[in-house]
Length: 84
Image (tube, rainbow, N blue to C red; front, side, top):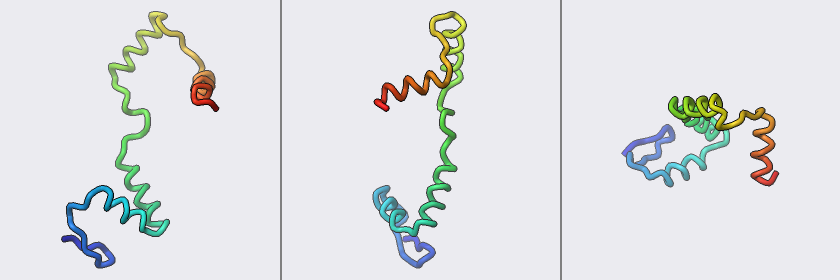
C-alpha cells in the first residue's frame, strides 16, 4: 500500500479507471497541474511523422506525382470534409 499526501492509502497497482476517478475528484487547480504534467510527458503534435515518410512526400512533390497547396487551402478542405 502507498499513502498519498492526504494520508489516504492506495494499492500500488491501481487500475487506470481508479486513477481517473481519483484525478477527477481533485480540486480544479490540482487537476490542471496534473494535466499539464501529463501533457509534458507526451511528444509534441506532429512529431510522429517518420523521416521516411517525409522523404517520400518530398519525392512525390519533386516528381510531380502530387501538387503542393497553400496551408489555407488545406485548412479549407479539411473543414469542408468535416462539414464546417
